[in-house]
Length: 239
Image 1 (tube, rainbow, N blue to C red):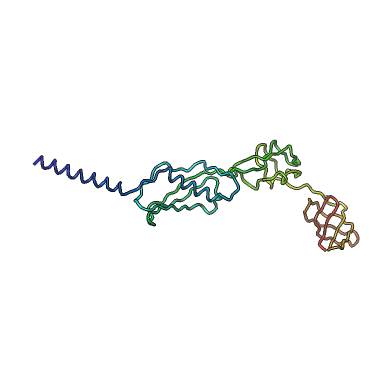
Image 2 (cartoon, rainbow, N blue to C red; image 1 turned 30 degrees about the vertical axis):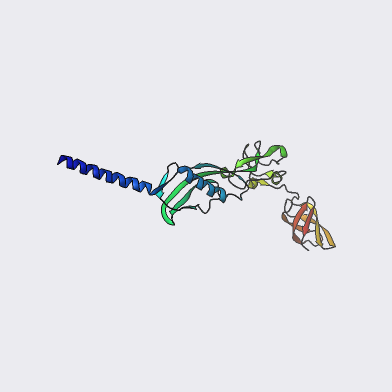
């Protein structure tokens, strides 16, 4: 009886082990490396036209994934506001033979390196930016905020409106154009239409930089009109 029980136990154990092996053999193991490569391809495809140097710092997936055997397809879902860099969580759906088998959330961190204007020294309020004050340096766009400047020409000759620390990207909204025309200054008002050009003497009723619109009083008619600043002594009106 004991011998029969032992044989029966061994038969049951063999059946259980056999079933376990069959289930494993009927599945597929996706390595974490392979899944990370798929996530990387998705990120690089999303940022292909960014014009920046993309570096993927982290894809937080370490464990292999066991799924049923069959044709595997990945689907990725990124937050709508995500531009393709910085820290976020990407949703990944795994389908086998078009059947949903796995739904995952994968944290990622991506660098987007691009040239931007960086202050070499502290720039106090009221300072006029010179070529020796700034340089173009590659920085991670994900680590800066605000309207950073990407071209030296956009900052040179402008006045600092908000103090800028050394070794930080220069924000365009921290700068302002130098006024060419001062309030109360005498200017030449120019009106052109084809070959016809009319000029008059006026007085600025506000300060303005090149391209700014200011009010100017015509000294002959005493009427005030809106004019665009051309240079330090000339404004133009629509004619």
